[in-house]
Amino acid sequence: MSNWIESWSPQKTESFLQEVSAHLSELGGPLTKDLHRLVAERRYIDLINFKFEYSRSDYSDLLYARQIHALFQKQEWMDLGLNPKGVAEKKFWEMEKRCLETNTKLDSGQLDAEAWRVVTLARSKIRRILGRVPTLDKLTISFGPGATTNVKGRIASPRAKLNARLACSRELLPVVGRLLAEVPYWAWSQTFKNSRTPRFDVQPLSVEPLEFGALLLSRLESLEREVVFWPEVEVHAGKLSFVPKDARSMRPIVIEPTLNGVIQRGVGSFMKERMLKCVNLDLTDQSRNQRLAKEGSIHGGYATVDLSSASDTVSVGVVRLLLPDEWFDFLSELTTGEINSPDGVRTLEKFSSMGNGFTFELESLLFYSIAKSVVELLDLQGEVSVFGDDIIVNSRAYNSLASVLTQLGFLVNNEKSFWEGPFRESCGADWFEGKSIRPFYQKKLMSEQYLYSYHNWAVRNCENSLAALILSWTNSSMRLWGPDGYGDGHLVGSFVLHQSRKARRRGWGGGTFDTYSLRPRRFKTVYDTDWVFPCYSVYTRSGERDRTDPDIVRGSSGYAKVSIYTLASTVFRRI
Image 1 (cartoon, one colour):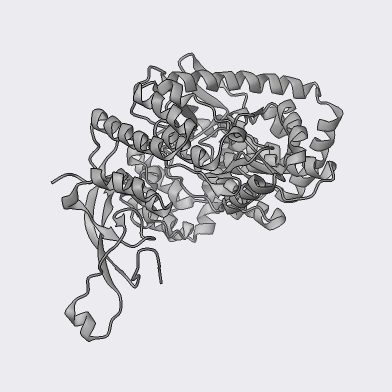
Image 2 (cartoon, one colour):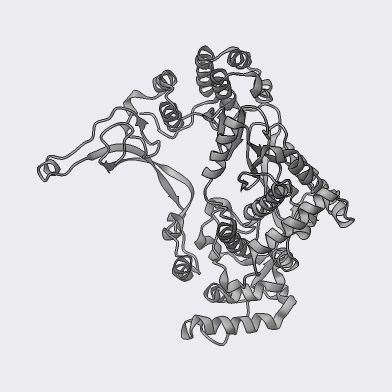
């Protein structure tokens, strides 16, 4: 029997994509046929580099042409001779050079009058949104799911991070004592684990946590900036790493030290709450951006603005210019301003990068305040919405906004920004004249699992002939059918619920259907600091699986067929 998650060979995957492309070419128009010709001739680089001109196409042709493009655009397995990691690394240092130029430019005040007006208004908005700098006891600190400088991603879990040696960036040293005082059991567990570290006269379990925290704070503050010599805390530079993005390039991230990571997430959550409270900007929900993008594709009133390498161009100078001084100083202490490189330790010109726990919230705050200020100064109507570097403003504000952003060192991507014509895209939603043309992106080698996802996407988008083609490639002996709304572990389509005779006699409605489910991957080992984990779980009040089950780490360890109870009686209706 086939394995549901086993990847196909590159040859079989390519054959499948070739057949899908041929099928789509029959459904689309001239543009679709042109792109399929590139696929048939295996000119994949030309296909990936193809640029769409939305004003010269019709809906149906664009719909299928973009689907062909999406089958190859983000492939991670195809060797096209492009060296994606090398491209990403080169671009990272190019953006560092750009940040240096921006820092120099802003230090000398080289902005035009329009940009200064925008900056002045944006500063006042940011001050009102952020309010006072929070004390550390007001932050809910927690671990992120990824790696740190001394915990590898494959074993990354709260337990592993609690056990790892305490590490922070050089910038965090002045506040590391106050931070550790907020987590006294974690700090004490490290002194207990390592006999070379200083011990405290008081056992933490014999006093109240707040009292022990005060004792710890007193001990650490006596060391002041010399805490770097305290054996329990190591000073780490960040680690430059790369993760898959598309077929042409990878995405650079900087892996943070453990102590930086936990406090950065706390600050990010605080900023997120302030933006929701003060300007009703919900950074947990992309639907607002998606709605405005749809409206913009219909009446043209909204522009969607995209920035290239947004987080890598948030320079130190921009943050210093826009944030209140006390907030700039506060956030500067939490960043990792140095990274290890082949040439040794390098000081970064950017303020924070992907990997920093508050980068997303910070760039959302900056772009929202700038965009809102531009709209107000132009006396324009309409909403302003931001989600990370996805910006939506009145279309008539686009040119002014692009000019200000460029002066502040950002790269406005005119190929992916849309302020006129029938197309808009934002936050994973692509609209053409109010109709969705969002394709299915295939990134990895095909498997039964990905076939199920692609099939269900086709069914949900009423592409019945495409769904039938995909179904023909699935293993008939493994097929499971069920209702929509329960994931892609089964094929969405006609199904029969199973119900026991005992349940029917008792008057129970509904029944069960079978679906495939990935098994979580567990890394089971005993750490010296495991006794701290219950304290962490209570502190975070988390319902997330990786925090309530301490052994679960990223990835999966296979799959299983499971039964789900439901009252759904049709393919799409859920009760």
